[in-house]
Length: 120
Image 1 (tube, rainbow, N blue to C red):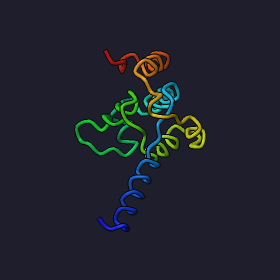
Image 2 (tube, rainbow, N blue to C red):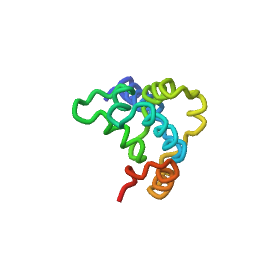
Image 3 (cartoon, one colour):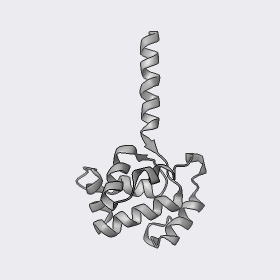
């Protein structure tokens, strides 16, 4: 592999990592709850954020809610606009993915009254 190709590949990977936003469990549950309240359902919220799956557009939103994947920055910006919440405030609630634990997520879901999404 050429030096240029290696450097391009590393830049692409770095950019992909910058485009992912991991949020603290409590804040993540809170803002997704606001989105769910406005949209009415997980699938509808997924569609509002731009997910296109015909069968389950809310699948990615569910994975984000459970802390299994990060918010793509573009989708987080859409959510901020959708729930009328400042994007800069959302970025202040970023965390390291290693700090997201099943226990923290479970507690956050319970506090946000999202019992139906608590993993068994």
